[in-house]
Length: 336
Image (cartoon, rainbow, N blue to C red):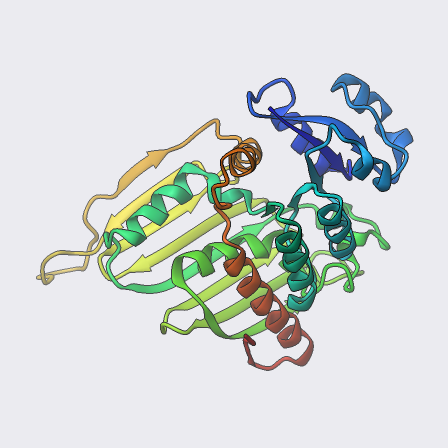
């Protein structure tokens, strides 16, 4: 059993605790730290979590093997660096940083200390994404053509001015950090490096922050991608990968709906129609538990993290380019 501390107990930090506490055979939380302890004393008592007075106290605790960081993005670099120096393994929420340079500092610190650094792209562990990954690798989609990623939420109108998740310094390029980075991560894993991007942001549902983001991506392979994300509409998720032999669409907020449509296998003699679709449903999946248990396996067996650090770093290079494009209104090449 891996013993962990949760750092940050907002909505997402509490979701981490609920996903494994009393449910997982390999991962549990034994301590917690938050900037607002009075708000979560009841939650911590319910889940058997002693509250530490400081982050430093967490790092000094010999029973804690892993720190799980559900904190503002700008705090990650210092928190990861200190945790690595203390010999703690680390799970850091996405995005790992707000620049590629900051991400490199964190990766270097973890490698120097010999600790596992896992990044919170929990959707990689969903069976629908696993099935898509398999079909890309085994060629069932053929040559990749294009990718469309859509994810929206209705949180924007309920976040007040001054909320850190709407701060352009903490969450640049509108909906990018909140939801867009998930689709970007899938695109990079499945289609490879990105060459250039063009980003447009806007204020469509709220007046005090950018809440809607659209990005066009060109990959080094020639594949093109489109990301469309908003914080101010009905919650939705759809990720579609088009290949020369068919398409896969993953949809629903839980990613439960998987649909494969093969390309026509004969020249049309009338209207072009698709062959019957293959439809699957994956329900009851806890992606947070899956990623924390994968972290436990990496710690106990030495297996690499399923979220490759080199892909994370390239993702941060693309992140930098998207932010620059949103500010300039121009196409921006991705750095290396």
